[in-house]
Length: 96
Image 1 (cartoon, rainbow, N blue to C red):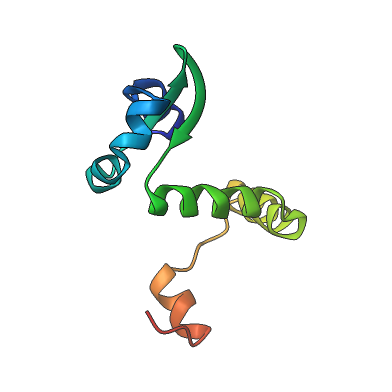
Image 2 (cartoon, rainbow, N blue to C red):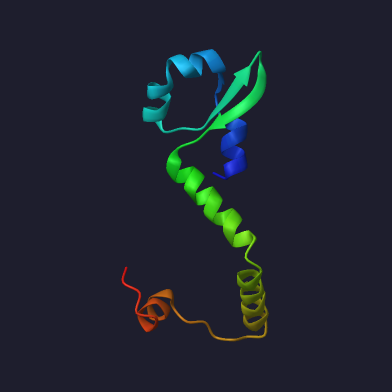
C-alpha cells in the first residue's frame, strides 16, 4: 500500500480520544488521522514509516542523486547492462 493510500484509509480518531488512548494507538502501529471537531488536524504514523518518508524526501531533494538516477535510466534505455546489487555492494566494501 502506498503512503497516500494508507492515509486515505486511516481510521479517524478524535484528538481527545487519541490523547487519552495514545499508548494503545502506538502499540497498534497503524496510521491514524487525528481530527478536531471532525476536521483533519494531524496524522499519527509508526516511527519506521515516518523515517522512510523523511529519507525519501531527502533523496528527492538531492540534485546530484537525481542526476545520477536520470543518467542510469538513459543508459538502461540505450541497452547498457546492469550490475547486480550484491556485486555493487561487494565492490564498495559495504557489509550487509
